Image (cartoon, rainbow, N blue to C red):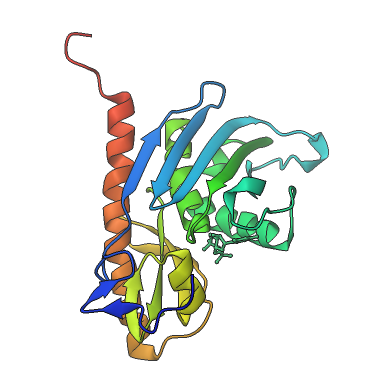
Amino acid sequence: MKKPEKLIVDGKRLDGRTPDELRPLKIEAGILERADGSASVELGANKVLAAVYGPREMHPRHLQQPDTAVLRCRYNMAPFSVDERKRPGPDRRSVEISKVTREALEPVLFLELYPRSAIDVFIEVLQADAGTRTAGITAAAVALADAGVPMRDMISSVAVGKIDDTRVLDLTKDEDNWGTTDMPIAMMPRKKLITLLQMDGHFAKEEFGQALDLAFKGCEQIYGAQRQALRDKYAIKKGE
Ligand code: CDP
């Protein structure tokens, strides 16, 4: 697709959304039998799975920490998830995303409760259309809760950005490519604490505040869907 002259026409984006609208979102908890916890997130064309194992004894042993568990996160993109086949295996981008994912999730976990243990989080991107790191974090947080890992709060995550000089929520790949700014955010939705903030491009000071407000609102909506996914899995059906 060629870059259109405008990315927002009459207040509507290329896919018909308003600037403060999320893509269609679907979250499911407990979708994998063999993982201790799991979740799937579909956000627009993104399809992401998360699986959690642990807390369990850390192997290899020399990586054990005597006074705390260690959170290990691996973000991986399937070769068929993007337009141009992605070479399988880790690359700079996935190593970076795995690191920021760990840092985004760690603050809500009580790792000190599980000395010498590991909690492993695997994120698999099956289909990508921008915003996969945030969708992965959103899925991983639900999978951690599904695994019964004690948490201080949920973690909800979404990107905000700037296209045609307008702040927008949840950029698509086209908007990410043709826009000027992309700012992925993760936060604790109840405590309103930010655990991930990256920025590609820039915002003026007042734009930054507006973009943060937009991200907070987006995360609130995502938090609602995360809770609903967990409720749906654990709801005791009438008559059972
Ligand atoms: O996915 P996210 O926005 O968190 O990360 P990004 O590095 O900003 O990548 C934006 C998008 O570029 C991804 O979601 C993919 O749709 C696309 N991409 C790609 O087509 N091929 C890659 N090797 C990596 C990313």
